[in-house]
Length: 386
Ligand SMILES: [Zn+2]
Image (cartoon, rainbow, N blue to C red; front, side, top):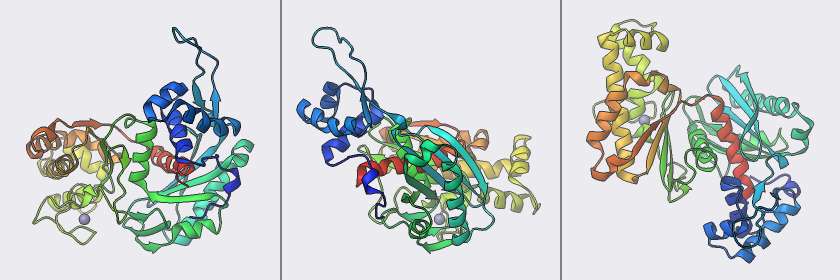
């Protein structure tokens, strides 16, 4: 995307400036000496790189602290309210929008129903959401330059094209371009799970982990991968599609066209479809299915057990291929976790090869607004990528 407000951006004019800025942002407050040690830059280079960021108000020096022997040090810290960021996550039925500060802390959250999934309606909805979020404070209007928008599916971040989004029924939608016609901000469009992975790596459980995977369970089953400290984007924009790893060779046909994918067995829609078939009750809802299974209905329990095996196989494939330190499992599908936890863990332990099984499985709920925070995190990230 073409930057539309270049003049107002942080003065990230060299790789050294970007390195110092990201180090202070994700690990600060931190002294110049520590920045130098952690990044391999010389102390002089750190001082030189920090200067324009201090002058532009993005970094501040804390009051001097005496550090044992030697001269006092003034740790560098980010001024979190120097700039604000917007994040909007598009789901199949609503928009979730947030305003965050530079450290991706959520300041305002808004939900807005989507009357239609058609691209024009979604673009109008996002534009209205942006207006409503900025109207919350004069400071937001003055100091917001970047918007991140995320959708599920195959997204080309470089061009802002959504190539395929199953839940919106979109193919080849130039979302970034359509938004740029209506919204005067620098816009980044990306896959929703990759965006949450960025937030996790910079501001969450991923800080300090050299490699980790974030797997989300729910309407879709997604996976963001961090390897050697970087989010894996894939040379075609597709990587970590754990939902479409084939785990049951003779399994059901997936919406993607393939057979036996994890998502065809363990997504919310797949669980509902299998439960309806198993019981012969065509009107069953997910809530009823979860309740029935918890009350001990054998047919329903089998559906969850099979989903657990599918997820466990998918997680083991990730561990065997990438060898992450930990896998964080999250998403709204985790609400029913008690119904397939044993199968996930047992299958993972059986299928993970050798030391790959030492990979830690962390289970954590994911409030819906966290998806929008991920979108804001990719907007923060644009500060460093130009
Ligand atoms: Zn599939």
